[in-house]
Length: 92
Image 1 (cartoon, helix red, strand yellow):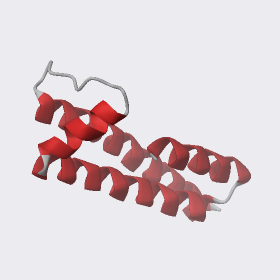
Image 2 (cartoon, rainbow, N blue to C red):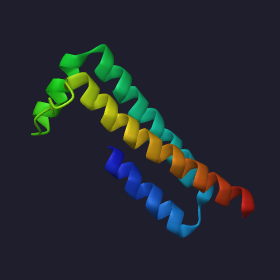
Image 3 (cartoon, rainbow, N blue to C red):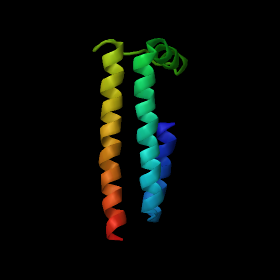
Image 4 (cartoon, rainbow, N blue to C red):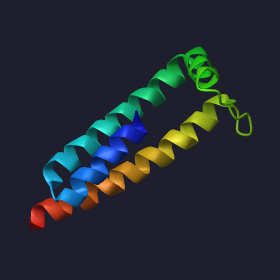
C-alpha cells in the first residue's frame, strides 16, 4: 500500500497539486504508524504478513526491533517529504 501511495504522491507532486500530495503523504504516515503499532501490539500479525508476502522476517535486530527500524526510517522520510511539500504549498 505504501508503494501505491508513493506513486500517487509523485504524480500529484509533478502535476503541481501540492495540497493533495501533502494530504496523501499524511495518509501514508498514518498508515505506517498504524502498521508500527499493530506490529508491536500483535507480533504474530507481523510474522503472518511477512510470510504471506514471501519475505523472511529479519532476525538481525530481533523481529520487533527490525520492524521498528524499518518503519521509523519510512516514517522519517515521509515526514521530511511532507515538510517539503508543505513549504512548496505555502510559497505557491
